[in-house]
Amino acid sequence: MAHAAPFEPFRIKSIEHIRMTTREERAEALEKAGNNLFAIPSEMVLVDLLTDSGGAAMSDAQWGALMMGDEAYAGSKSFAKFEATVRGITGFHHVIPVHQGRAAEHILFSQIVKPGDVIPSNSHFDTTRANIMAAGGKPVDCVCECAFEAEHPCVSKGNVYLPKLRRVLDTERVPFVMCTVTNNAGGGQPVSLSDLQAVSAECRKRKIPFYLDACRFAENAWFISRNEDPRPVREIARAMFDLADGATMSCKKDGLSNTGGFFACRDEGLAEKFKQRLILVEGFPTYGGLARRDLAAIAVGLEEVLDEDYLRYRVGQVAYLAGRLHDAGVPVIQPAGGHAVFIDARAFLPHIPPPQFPGQVLAVALYLESGVRSCEIGTLMFGDGVAPPRMDLVRLAIPRRAYTNTHMDYVADHIIALHHRAAQMRGLRIVQQAAALRHFTARLEEIVPTGAKA
Ligand code: F0G
Picture 1 (cartoon, rainbow, N blue to C red):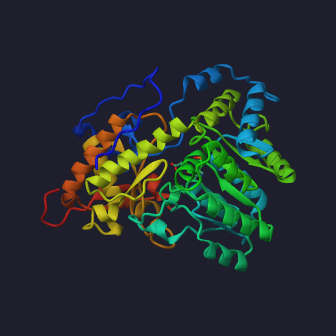
Picture 2: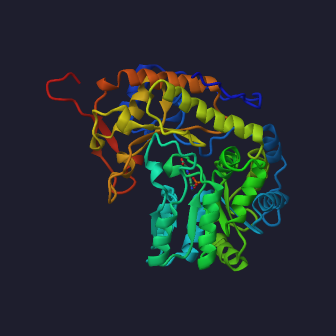
Picture 3: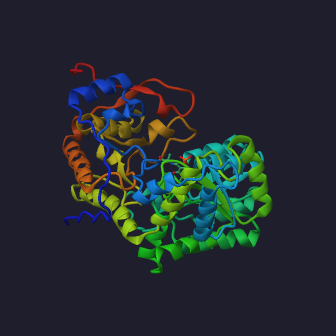
């Protein structure tokens, strides 16, 4: 089945030049970088799918809002707009800006997590996990089992598996429950409204607060409106927030902005404690470590992200890339998530065992052949932890409004070509690594079988 490229509901007013590179130049860059794509300079990248975070193209309305930013330290007009917008969308009265999502996580957890506490979620994102652990807590993932089956057709693979959550709540000290919408660590998969309702009811029954990690709330609401509840996306988003006591947010995703985030909640006492800490480490509560103009741009972005024409295109572009790959026999997680396409690298490279980093092999080969930068999420990223990861994936995360459908075709064509000669690829071994978060700085080399040509 041929996939239709989605109509882009915007035209381009300002462009950023892409420097074309040759295969030789990219081979040299990989050599210098020790086959680590985090060490490749961005001017050597043609299509950058390392992350969907912070790379959104802002609209003319957002650039206009930037110019109108009111840089007052206290009581800025831009903060008032930001606060009103977040209140309007979420219904949370207390709105506290931060410079990016993990700052909200850090401040929140340092206030309410005690050593030995357990914090369940569908899947914690890595900064969330690390910030819980830094506060002495233990993050526990309770995502449903179908999340680990690449071809499983469930449309809510981000759901919390309730029996597991109940077991944790019955046996552990749990100060609050989280849920990540969409579930980034599990493939950008949505959480259904009925699952959020069930988790919320369980928490309310036990008087345990429930917080959303809301980075991609609009994409999640879009999926709910397509699969489950036909109300307008804005109403669905509000229904999601109504089930929670608060949310952490990175506006670098569904804020359609290049920086920023917030914590919002209903509890005045918690908001006060949060603000006291914020003043110490981020800034005064009417700017939270941001320029006020950034708050102005985010306020516009949060409205634009709920535009249904935008969301149809956005989720459609991800589905288009996933569909082209799937039709050509490339193993991708189905159905496509909201912000990224995930390739199953173990199925793509069955001859390369996980200890030889099949995800990184594929990511490096894709960069060499095409200049497309992706991200390994597998044994290199998580294999130095307590348990080996269950999957080796390559994430193609698509920045919002930044790339055209032609760029997606370019990416798909190169991956399909690589798939045809996957058997020729060789594993990698680590030659240098740091004690923690090794994937950011590790250096790797190709494993050349004895007697073969390097
Ligand atoms: N929560 C989720 C679900 C995220 O995906 C991220 C960031 C954060 C929290 C932290 O937000 O970056 O503003 O501090 N995810 C990016 C990614 C980095 O590539 O997936 P931040």
